[in-house]
Image 1 (cartoon, helix red, strand yellow):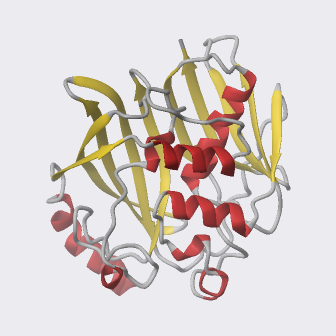
Image 2 (cartoon, one colour):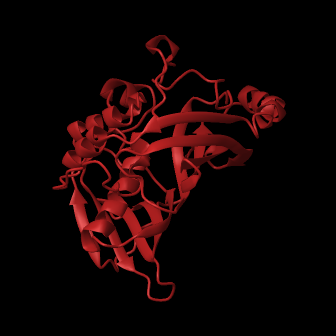
Image 3 (cartoon, rainbow, N blue to C red):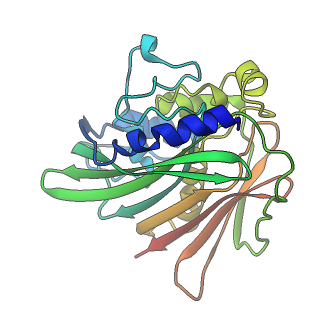
Amino acid sequence: MTQPLAAAMQATFEDLRGWIGKTAVAEDQVTATPARALAATLERDATFDSGDPLPPPWHWLYFLTMEPLSDAGPDGHPKRGGFLPPVPLPRRMWAGSRMAFFRPLRVGDAIRRESRIADVSVKEGRSGILVFVTVRHEITTGAERLLVDEHDIVYRDLQKPAGGPAPKMAPNDHAWMREIRPTPVLLFRYSALTFNSHRIHYDFPYVTGVEGYPGLVVHGPLLATLLLDLLLRQRPDARVTRFDFRAVSPLFDNAPFAVCGRPDGASGNIALWAKGSDGRLAMDATATIA
């Protein structure tokens, strides 16, 4: 992080915090086709008809923001300064979420989402200046609340810090584990299903040449979806009431990774995590089931 950019960040921080409290409302309908497409992508033998419940967190298939192509920024994301604050840092990632589920979305539901910027904060550490934006989404149908999804977006510079701490290693005490091979086709399908045009997931020359990653980046929400999918493969009748996850380090399409889980006897929750082929922790999560 250069000093001019750091100074500019401090100068604009109060302006960024002015976005706190900003809201946006969207409406949609739960249709079967996106759910069927995601089931096929995840190798699930599932069909969805009117009234059928969707697994969590498949609400990400709906309320897709469809800006004109001319409004895309250089990284493929929409240009800054719409609903989200115009953070002057080039790299944007999904850092984590905290979700509470009250009842499943069902095919045919008319749904409404109210989104609010809950917080904007700036931190400085080994990786330079980081800006965190927390967005709280509440989804309802009629007067019934379906779920709350509070997620954190992190912005940072393209420059990599010199050195840095050793990567955190994942636990080895899993009860369940599934190997995933993150092919470009898998990443393309998930990008298409969620209308995610961020170039780090499909544009190899961009992600390696501009952002400096070693390969296509696996979506954070896709990892979270695979973690809950692992749980529901083991316990098909489980009703997930809460799910929290935190991204720890990125995964790429150049090596397989594993999604793992085990019941936590002390809390009654389910511990879930994703790990790279080298054993490093990529995502840490906890699910609560009724």
